[in-house]
Length: 476
Image (cartoon, rainbow, N blue to C red; front, side, top):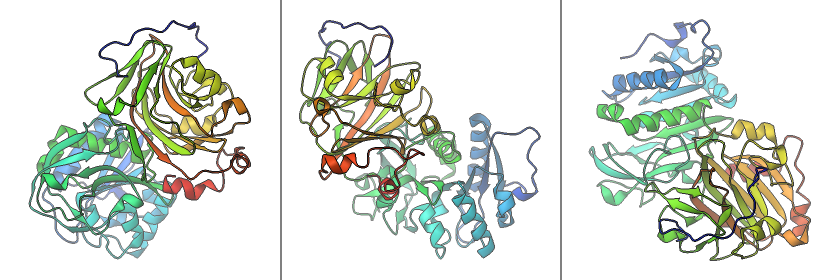
């Protein structure tokens, strides 16, 4: 919703297209450029085992990405760069096809401290074939290399369309590389961004669940890993370069994303027209479906709502993007109705528009409670980039996470707006508002009593509940 005058518009017919229907000197010797206050990345490519002949191509590619992406890149194979003082200069360290034992104990300690103080890690390909006896590194990388078949084409299934490393990719990504098998599956610990379709190539050994790119928040830092990048050709491939750039942007903090593990969700809208069968349009306007699986609002004020079932206790996730100064919201806890104003009067809206007053801006429970604006501002990606909401309803308690950060914790006390049984919907606000939605998914949770949930409703001064730490780390 918005304070803009919109008026109450008569219901309009929904259209047919509408869906309701070469490595440099040691980095330690390189001084920062005068006046350089931008992000800085260190590419580390020391090998103590197999050496990939694509490393020079990879270094050159990351440097080129830095030139276009606005960050400075230093490259080294000298482990002496891993000191507390030198690492402090960098926003992320890229392990580019490193192999074997590449850091001594003191260098490992310096790097662990760097990560715990908020540093970023990017692992490319054989970064997973590195430091097998260093448990901290194994957790940071997410999984260790086990084996690989011959270089061959394969189909990559893109699981996350909001993370900057995968937001520009289609549902499937067909490319040629050397496809690693891993000793363990990182899915329970990390957020999987893309996985391999093992039926599309030969030699996969992970029983049909084969993550190939993932991210995680790890012991205070950010970690992104991609299994691609064995071949020289990879680093000239536009989509792979964009994949790397997005991973680096997230690792250095130039983009936000929800990198908590995500398990147990089922799709309500997965980008296909068939998945819209359970949805209905209330009021005027509509949403159109593009080839990339994105719904975009047109007209209004109306709402696309999930009519197939209501929900009692659940975690709702969806990805959203504004084109500019646009308006939309996600409604929860309202009774079934083809009048969009019923949701306004009987449910709650989680606002998307970032330009209104505090109780009516992104992350607010519209008209009732502002988000923690400092946390919201740090977590929010700008117009043109994707954001992820988790809206978690348990009893009368409603929590809002933006890109994995809890920004609102609200407790309902109005019986007319009870959250214990209701529907969810997405607003199409008006003719001048263009908001895109994709990947709506839900996980139903064990029911909690209203009294129990209400006792936890007030936000702590920093906007975080002490008891939520374990929950958030598990993506619940």
